[in-house]
Image 1: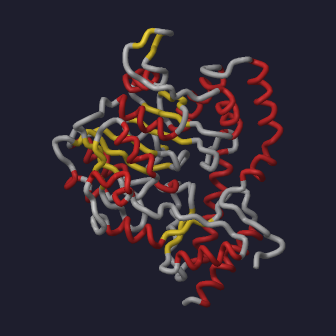
Image 2: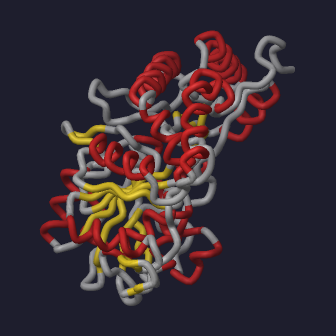
Image 3: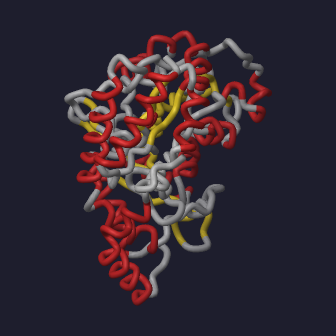
Length: 374
């Protein structure tokens, strides 16, 4: 039965987070309502500039969500029918979906066992004359091996899109993700490390031409009202979400620090007990998710639930085995590391507001389970 003191521990406690920042959130919402500006206003522009600056990019463009950010990036790179885009099969569906939506073909490459990110050593064998881009996913907030990937891309004249939707603030060799490749994509879905109160996303780039293309494409292919030079889409970040994100951006580094502290404590307690993520002295992981691996994954998830502790599986079915991608003719066994990981992985609560007492309860519940099932 659940512990009486902790009747329910969610994956991310958004209510507790709001309690900490309620006053500035209500203040900024009032400002937006009083302004009468709800699309392409002052706060949206300010957010674009600040997030671009934070990521180390020259340009930022607010869009409706992270999926649109990916699709707009592909369109801006002129990727479409007949083109191939290499990516990982172990990610949220949107990564592969965006490729298919522009008419291109997703080409999957297996992942590294330790980081869960695309394995650079397997990219080159997947390259063909039709390969136009690589979408690199910094999964769970863990940075991919960008030096190796960028070298492969440069040698083969292939563009790099960073799916940094789970990884805002993650650093790699002194640079933050999103601005390392040609173009970077962020999601501000409510549960993300920087989350809105609805859907929202942003694109960053250091290339002026890509900035201009995305700027036009997100607004129906229009630079001037009622003048449309290309077929675009409606993907604009509204002022209410921008205002909320501006407030929360002030707390981002503090909250990321809390996530890293919680992750370190988990890992210290799980050494020699189960597979846990390695903790680096460098900021190469910001722990959007903290995932462990074990054979008895489903049994542990059930035990946690019985004790009032949330958990989640990210992701139970790799993309190459999803029904929607059957037309690609992949089969079970094609990407063994991704497939094995999908059967063993489990995400634990890692909200920045998670107390030491609640974390101790989670840890002790897992240790008891492992002892009884060892």
